Image 1 (cartoon, rainbow, N blue to C red):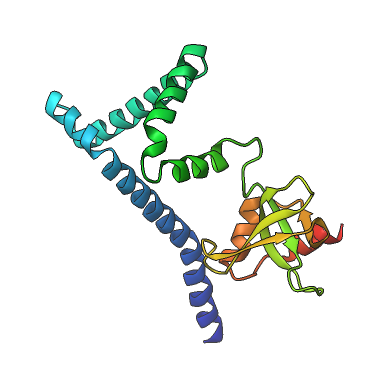
Image 2 (tube, rainbow, N blue to C red):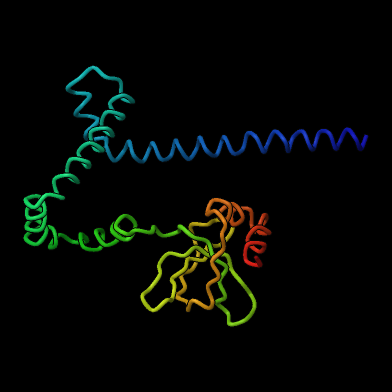
Amino acid sequence: MSRMKSLIKTSFLGGLTVILPVAILIFVFKWIFGVVARVIQPLTDLILIKSNLREIMADLLAVAIIITVCFIVGVIVKTQIGRFIHTSLENSILKFAPGYSLIKETVMQFLGRKKPPFSSVALVQVFGNETMLTAFVTDEHSDGSYTVFVPTGPNPTSGNIYHLESRFVHQVDVPVEDAMRSIISCGAGSAMLIDAYRK
């Protein structure tokens, strides 16, 4: 009887470990597609009016158009004339738009740097003792100090920001994805972090 219970339990858990990640992945992709579709809806509607395409094909075409436009604008602003036009437009109009400067600075923080944030994992000491927290390095400063984000498990999108001296930040050679998994699983799998720290 106990063997039957064990078989049922392991079979159920085995199936759950296969199905659940796939279901979550499908849900995330569906959510992302829904957000993108809402953003590009005006362009999609215009394409639908002008053509006989199905809505999903119109969405894909709208995304392709946006990517192409971004590429073309990027090429143009690299030229002397393009830079002049962009600077003039920004100084005369855009900088007076509410929130433009904040949005631009935020975008530049993620796209305008050589090393993107959340590209390295660290164990940090924030309490002045031997207690260490899993963190992601988000910025490195000219004086050698760091800004780190310490997420809370199992939800890595919430957490705290700390500004620490380099002696309290121990970067470890662990993939960001593995560190993220350990946070989502409330610390399970953290042995790789400790092993990397002790090497």
